[in-house]
Image (cartoon, rainbow, N blue to C red; front, top):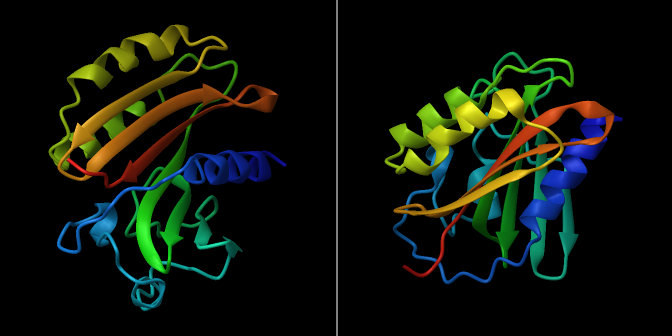
Length: 176
C-alpha cells in the first residue's frame, strides 16, 4: 500500500506539465541524456522500463527499487525512480526516497541526497537548512526549486499517509 502511494505521488510529480524545449547535448542525472529515446534508455540493462504508462504524447516509466540491493545507476537510497518521456524523448527524471518513519526525528536520506546534488554541481546552500528543519518536520511539506546546469531541480520533502516522510527530487531541463 505504501509503495502504491509513493508511486502515485511520483507519477503526479512527473505529469506536472513539462513543456521544456530540450537540448540534445545536455546530460541528465544518473548517466542519462536529455532527449534520449525510450529505446536507447531501455538498452541500459540496469534500468527496467517494463512498468510504463502512456497518456497522449507522454510515457512515464516507474522503476521500483524498494527491495533491490543493486540500485545502480540511481542512488543507494532510491526507492522509486520515474523516467518521463515526451514524444519518445527523455524530459524528466524523478528520484523518490524514504526520509523517516513517523516516530523518528532523524533526517534519513536528506543529507545524502543533498551531498549527491552537490556532486552534480547544484548549489545546495538553499537545501542545507533542510537538515535542520527535518528534525522538527511536522505535516508541512518542504519544496525548493533550484536552477542548475541540468535545468531545474525540484527538491520536495513531504509526509504521506501512514506517517512516513518521503523525499522526491525531480530533474527537468528547461530553457535557460
